[in-house]
Image 1 (cartoon, rainbow, N blue to C red):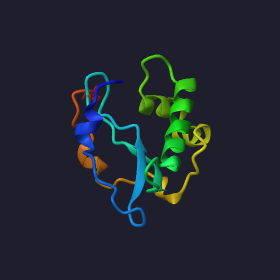
Image 2 (image 1 turned 135 degrees about the horizontal axis):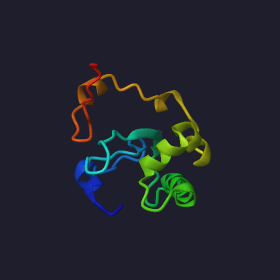
Image 3 (image 1 turned 180 degrees about the vertical axis):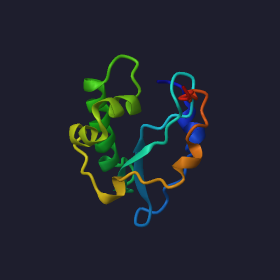
Image 4 (image 1 turned 120 degrees about the vertical axis):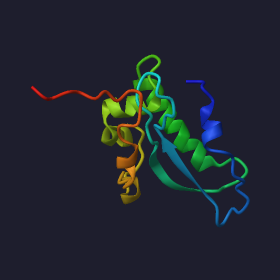
Length: 127
């Protein structure tokens, strides 16, 4: 969406060690709360090898995700919004990404972040 905020949220980290370093891919995160609530990104690929200098496994994984997104998303729909619309299970299937136990979203502190957005509307259920 050309906001460029991903650079400020995930600063660059040198991948100096081809043996010990690896790459994880997270998608669907969003900081802004202008149209909808902020969202945590989801871990979709827990580890890819650091195969410098062109990282073929990483490029292939990102290419799969972007091609599926380009083919299935609505105009101006963010990647996370598209994944939620089709369902995360379908996202893994369409992007040809194996689902592992590392992909289960069980962030325990999420309760602290609920109801903290300008998008949250308190409703009165008292009659």
